[in-house]
Image (cartoon, rainbow, N blue to C red; front, side):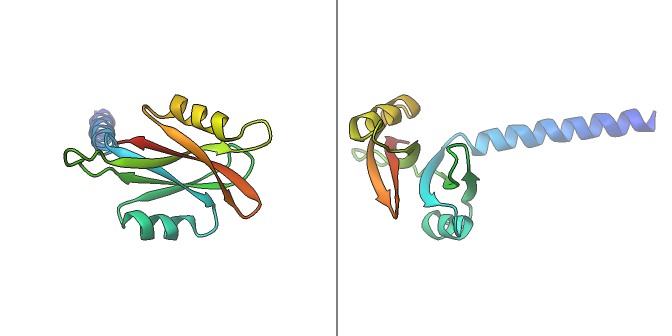
Length: 127
């Protein structure tokens, strides 16, 4: 009986935690910060101590992605968030990058931004 009570308590805690995480991520923006060197420090320096970072290796090269809470827009200016859509190449240049950003982010636009020897597809979209 005690094990069942403990199990129910843990499940309830997980449900509460999940709902809190989902609420806090509702207005989350992302910002691609280039290569992963010093990712967390650069993320917190740019977007504050509550921001979180992740080194995304899905494109083969480790790219720093910073997650931060979007600010509330004040009319008439709409808050813009930054993101990324992979690497620009001979096969995917400016127009391709812009299209990838439009598909990935609602209202998104993109451009190729060269950092060192890599050309990254940077996106901007309304929060």
